[in-house]
Length: 262
Ligand SMILES: Nc1ncnc2c1ncn2[C@@H]1O[C@H](COP(=O)(O)OP(=O)(O)OP(=O)(O)O)[C@@H](O)[C@H]1O
Ligand SMILES: [Mg+2]
Image (cartoon, rainbow, N blue to C red; front, side, top):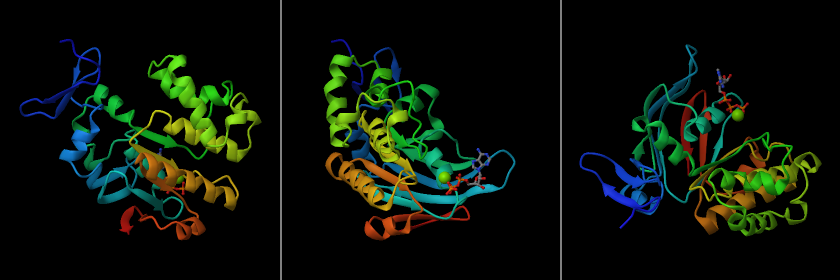
């Protein structure tokens, strides 16, 4: 029987999980997270992780923690404490200078470029500065991750429209981002981050540019994604009122050191 893309191929002797990506065998089976999370209770594990940029001082020191699938954490700490740097490690866009990062049960340091890209598809991010493409409509911006994955428009169109309606942008889907308000841009950025149903959603100060009322509504949106889709969420914020209003555990960075308050 021919292999189908994403097909689970079990563990090869002495190696990690394997799957078929449509063209060749790859070590990391992105399509079968239930199986990997069953084998590994933690979605993310950091062990003695340190990060420095170039020859500079260590920005993150001895980070040892684990994150369970389906959890929601705030990431907080003063400006310059390393929140964005930690999110870059979690996004797999920066490598640690020392220590071990395990995601989806795989030691990230052992993955080749293809496997990292496969894994990266399961991690969504909302940047503070939106990063929407101004020459594409709101609909096209949100659909972009699916287009990149090669889905035809006929397939993704209803899903994109449904999500845009869900975030309250149904009426604005044909508008260019330059015509959207700050809050609308932020909701478009959230929709784009979640359209491909990532397992992990990272958000870097997603409420930084909006008023307190909208801030709270945006966190409700994240809470809903966490509750209904089981998305694991790490949301960086400085805003004390938000931290007080939502009873999620806090990862607190201070001078590069992390403590978790449940
Ligand atoms: N690409 C980089 N090259 C060198 N140093 C960097 C780089 N990015 C961040 N830093 C330094 O790392 C430290 C932590 O920065 P980071 O942006 O992670 O902090 P942050 O907690 O996100 O701050 P903020 O709340 O202001 O966004 C800072 O001292 C910063 O100057
Ligand atoms: Mg930052």
